[in-house]
Length: 398
Image 1 (cartoon, rainbow, N blue to C red):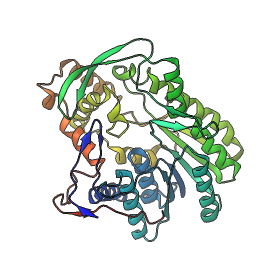
Image 2 (cartoon, rainbow, N blue to C red):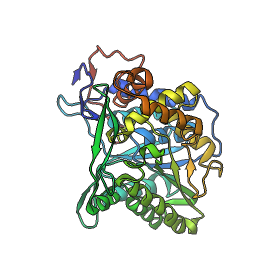
Image 3 (cartoon, rainbow, N blue to C red):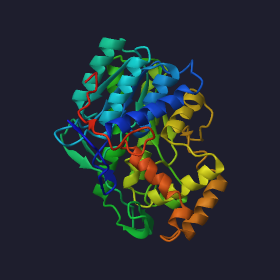
Image 4 (spheres, rainbow, N blue to C red):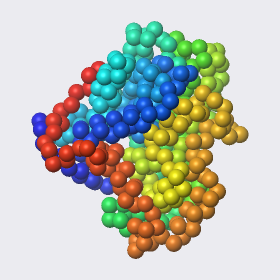
């Protein structure tokens, strides 16, 4: 059906998505990558697990249009139904496949379903074996889900955004109300921590790599990369030292275990520590949106700001196939510009001074909101938002 679509926000999620806006957002990212020099030694057959939004989508675009890679994307998105639009990730995936087909028939197929399940893993393996002969040379793991059903036990686990040990109080921002407010976050129970690790840790990444190895679907020298965040001391209580941080530590330990598993094919498992950005996942974390709004202002003034596509294009072009920019733990530090001493000193000063009254001048709250709405296809130049559009968009390979 066709209709005029406007953003409808509930909490930290927009419940509508604009198909033409999502397509334009994908095309803008593709053009950014195409404007860069081609990466001759980049990956050629890439599996992206969590490929429809944020870092996963930007990774798929960077691989496909930066080094002409064939890509398979796995995601769990919702098609349009009646008056309800499809999810943004559905429209993004449809736009990506459409653009890939126009680019000289660049291979792009997508699988829609629960990436945590054995069924989707097997479906992906079957596609790799049938179409590629089991020659994946890069696996990107970029899932950000609030819950996970264990494929063996059938039990469903829910992640939580909590601190550990004691209540935590700090500033945050109600983005839609444009108001700085105090937030109190309760400490997690041991079960909360265990559940969050089960959802957001490295267990499923390990299961994917084990399954791909077992099916001989990885090429000699294949790499796999997962994404994490560390951030400044300012956010550590809710992030690095909270339930999410425990999950991310598990993810990083999994990388070391995977390196042992991949030794037989001279493969490598990597962790990329990415910059704080506006994603559907980060928008849900208390304290973080205010930090991001301040960070954006400072980094834009310094000329060092990056969005998802800029960050991933730099990762693929400069870091993923090099040992440059790695820390003592072997992590790729794509957050290097964010963690610059001058940047963080300016953030700390602004944090102390920010109030509701000076929010618009002390932060880039407008930039934050702009990026938030773009996640759902709104606010893109060249899109007529007053025109009725077809909401029932097909993903060619699904």
